[in-house]
Each structure stands twice: as structure tokens, then as C-alpha cells.
Length: 107
Image (cartoon, rainbow, N blue to C red; front, side):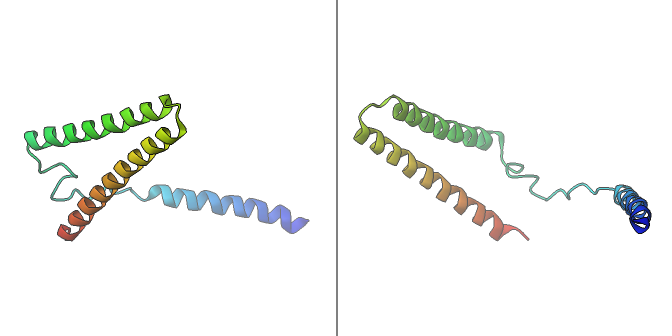
């Protein structure tokens, strides 16, 4: 019991000093890459085109979601779900390909 009374303050003191030593380390901001983010080297026209493509994809996905929710026929509902799933898979494959292309160019 006496060792417990001595060990609790010792552990508490150890925790305080370890927290202080961790807090004393300055956090370094992440290094800024040459490309300044995903769209840093795009022109304004390219950014606009990119945003419009994202918007179009979102509108199609939302439209399909609304159609799925409104559909009463189970077969038609399943067909719409499959159509939406195919669109999601295609978008995922496109993003994966784009990401892998970026990684190949990464130093």
C-alpha cells in the first residue's frame, strides 16, 4: 500500500514531464511541394473545367439517388442502383489512375 502511494505521484510526475517535453518540440509545418497541391499548377481555365466536371458528376449521382428513392418498382430501383454503382466504380477507377499517375511523377 505504501509503494502504491509513492508510485502514483511518481507516475503523475513522469506524465507531466513527458507532456512538457513533447509540448516543447516545435511542430514543423509540412514542406510545400513544388506543385503546390493538386491544382497548384493549373491555369484558371483548367481549374474551371475541373470544377465543372466535378459538378457534373455530383449532379448525375444526386439525380440517380433521387430516382432510386422515388422509384416504387423493385426491379427498376435495382437497375438504377446498379447504374449508380457502375458510375461510382468508373469514377473511382479514374481517380485511382489519376493518383497513380501523380505518384509516378513524384520525386
